[in-house]
Image (cartoon, rainbow, N blue to C red; front, side, top):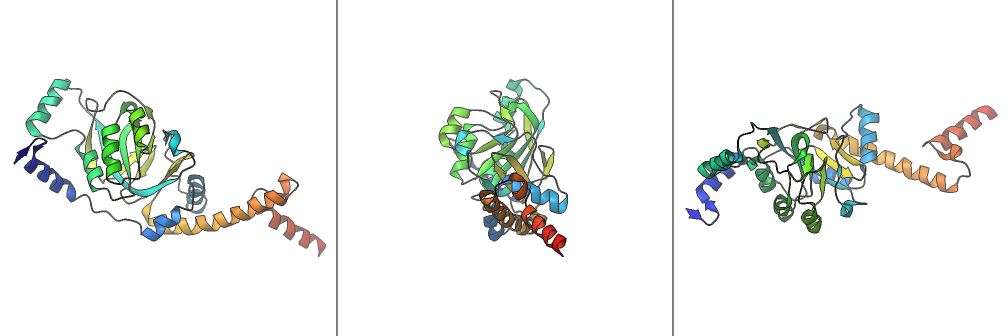
Length: 267
């Protein structure tokens, strides 16, 4: 059957082709909800101080003002893209017309199979000269309830995405579309993003400080330790409010240390 939008049998074929990669191991809803009480810096410190894990996605930042003061948390859905042989664009277009297959099909599959609240992570080899996301994909992702996208590459159509208020973390902005330069080769496979391996099912947390990935097998423990640290930080903030000197209230735990030292000296 052929419609205005193409051959439905081909679409069904593509859906079935990608469906086998769609099922991933996900963190529990309880764990995901727990992370909503945290921010990127606290999660980073917990990963580093408790486990020696550094999963800061270097060079990736929020792209829009409407993302200010917000924290975005979701399960990672991944897409792998690689540089292509630079064939003439007419050859690329002719191949698409003959096969109905696009160089961005894996990214489109990520949108189709993402669950509401997921975060799509696209590895574009870190190329900030090529946009691997634009307004049409943002429209599709927002329609499907995707929380945000993290791009190891650039974004374009910035004014229109801003109007959509779809959250994007990226290396930068470029008007150059990716069709000629990159092609997607993997959906829900391990990818590299900002020097960090991200796997489908890992937890992504992003805010104005940047983006951190939490390996799924550490998620529950990271949450437990981070909440403990958050409680201590709240105590520290109260100490800051009531103290006269910075030296007596910070770093965290100094008031208790000073008290114990005083008690020891008095014995």
